[in-house]
Image (tube, rainbow, N blue to C red; front, side):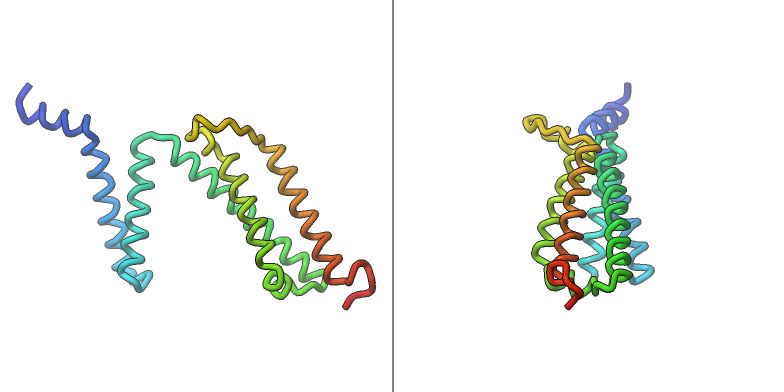
Length: 168
């Protein structure tokens, strides 16, 4: 085997191919963002390109992290769609969702943080942390989300109508 072949094999063993994939993906994504001038900030383009480069590198390395990220994104899209439906139903019931969300933003942020944490755990991310043995099945997660949603709706309806009266 020639010295050049030995050098290339050694570089591949050290992960140089992943570094090349990372650098190439950063350059392509940054170039595309610059060409379309989106976003206007150069630093924002750089951050987007670097983050995307890491995701592409992780996907090409064959780790479990891209699967976890995919599960998290899909779950959060479904939850976002459900939240949109909740806002629509609140508006149909005559409750101003924007005012209610603004008035109770602290509680809603805490609830959303808990939901995101539960999605994180149920997406398979707990497999990364071998020392933590928490098992949350999809059924338990959906039950907890339903309880949070039902509690929130009952609380909002009681708050808006003055506890069951005829409205404000």
